[in-house]
Image 1 (cartoon, rainbow, N blue to C red):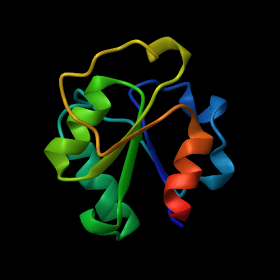
Image 2: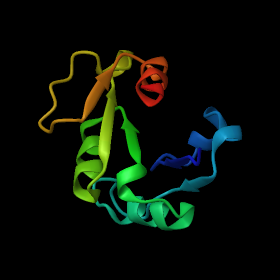
Image 3: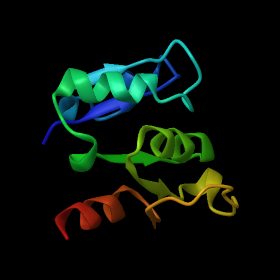
Image 4: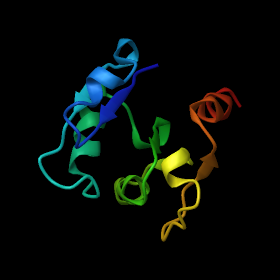
Length: 104
């Protein structure tokens, strides 16, 4: 499985399980523009159809939608009550939920 972290927070690689990352993309523009996601797909040589975008904000889900990707919204503690203005493909409580989705 190839994985990438697309983050506008430069400190994320130190706080993430980087052993599993194939690529790290830090966009120069807002995350809601699909350019950085399209670049990640190209860098990893993967198709839109085989990609699942995981995020914990509305801008993450919007970026996935604009790039034509399926998305999973992770309702982490800081966003449990957030009402999204865009519809993700799936929603889960935590990253363990993502793991279950991928295995299905």
